[in-house]
Amino acid sequence: MLQTRIALRGIRLPFRCLPSLPVPARGYSTIINEIEKPADKPAASVSSFIDPNTSFAPPPSRDDSGVVLRTYTPRTPGVRHLRRPVNDHLWKGRPVHKLTFPKRGQAKGGRNNSGQVTVRHHGGGAKRRIRTVDFLRMDPGPQAVERIEYDPGRSAHIALTRSKETGKLSYILAADGMRAGDVVQSYLPGIPEDLWNSMGGAVDPGVLAARTAWRGNCLPLHMIPVGTLIFNVGLRPGKGGQLCRSAGTYATVVAKGSDSRQQTIQEEEPLAENATEEAKVEKKLSQREQQKQERLAQHITVRLSSGETRLIHKDCCATIGIASNPNYHYTQLGKAGRSRWRNVRPTVRGLAMNAMDHPHGGGRGKSKGNIDPKSPWGIPTKSGYKTRPKWKINKAVVHPRPRNQGQRRRGYN
Image 1 (cartoon, rainbow, N blue to C red):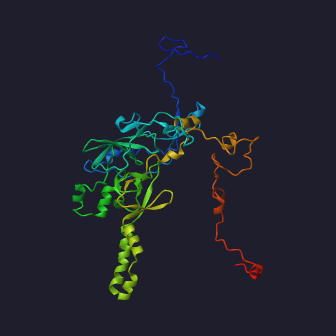
Image 2: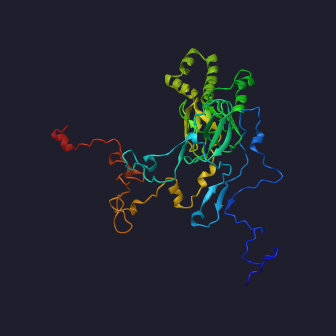
Image 3: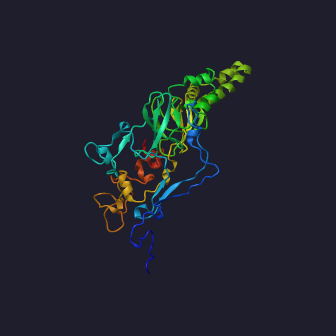
């Protein structure tokens, strides 16, 4: 069937290009599982909540937006199964050059100084520049967040901050919900003078928590209220954060040592007033119990995402909120090439290797030679009793062999 000709200002040729005609747009990517907001309630910008007279960031948002992923039209096999979280707020340009350094050397390929492979499945990958992230945040004063950036060296995002007092630029770990224009502050150097004056020169726990425990602020653990979600938690005073730095991870402040110590003192007070001298002597704590109480008074109980509970010193640093990019674990790379771009080489089964390359290799067909599962170096693996030496299996007290009556009669000792 012949195509109908389009008449426009005397042009009747069907193969002429008509730029003035509307061309339907062909979408390449779509967003799934996105909850649309009602039109009568426009989304207010984050910066509108910031009071210029205050020096802290707005509280975290409570709306449940669900898991938001971006899928792509399968024009090629590599994007058919590609899934990525929607992070349209990320900076599209390059990082600050003076805050980065190139990643070079044998460590990129899993080799040591002699060139031997010490970490398998590493090698290749695109060029990278390591971002120098400030995990301790000892700089005082408010800092404005200029932008949120992608960091190829970690799963969470980083934020570029500029100090309002000195103008110094630095990278910090971004909290979930942090955007450009927020103002964050670190209280590790101490409580600012204006905050002291607002509390009347004395520490008011309620006012202190209301003014400091905001998303993105860095505080010592003893200033954080019980039940607060934190990330980038330090393990030693004066050292940067080491726990909960991956995307979407967080810890919870369960209890403070001062609370348990105060409860113990209140229980001892009525006994000291009404009891006799003998009861006071019996109630006196032993040296081990005293040491335990002192240790609890100097540490904070923190529960990690795995369920593990730890005692961390009260002067260690922690950041309020949850680590950014919480939907990272829903990512699907879509093809093997994207793993190679990330410096990850393929993993080959030992059964598919030759006999000289792996204990499971060789043979005719799918067979590992009726041997126990082993690593490439011949060490038992797969956990369980096979991974322990035989002298540790069912180890118990060995009773001496009973002597029979004949040995006793013949005089054996």
